[in-house]
Length: 215
Image (cartoon, rainbow, N blue to C red; front, side):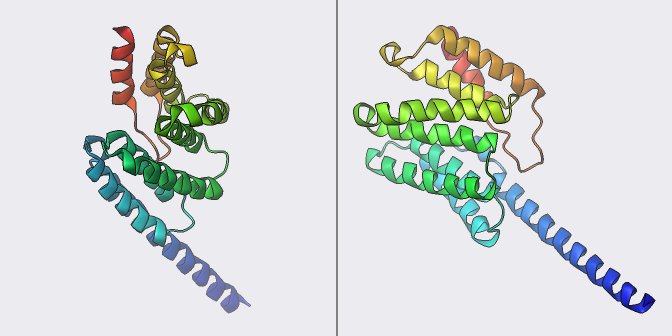
């Protein structure tokens, strides 16, 4: 009986060590992919980063962070690109990958921030056609993000950016934008990501938006 228990214990220990090693490899791969991501300035650079995360996503099919970052990179490629013919492709790929992240980790505040950003991409593709459809959706996604995690600074940054860049006749408000971005700034000061590979972006962008709102 003791021998059987010992074999079982050794087997469970081996499995635990194997899982730990696999997790360490995943974290290292993600850290490498994330290295320097806050310095990317062109659509091509963001697409290269997207490819790195997609390769990880293909191997780590149960992890939500790789598809999340693919969606993030596609969103940033949209923002940096001057080729309007590519906008719909960027938005669609971002949408597809954030759906994968959401399926793996439902009711996640970070995912809902990115969902709202992607809804904003569709509005920018065709404001007159898509604004009425995606505008309310983007707002509800941000509200859900704040409900899921009231301390998530990115939810407030995105809300402030929306108020800042939306024309007044469509609900934009520079004064409200400034107040919301100030809330985001305060939350960035106390925010701590869950790990080295969890979302921790946006602080410098929020500072830039706040500077614009102050002019």
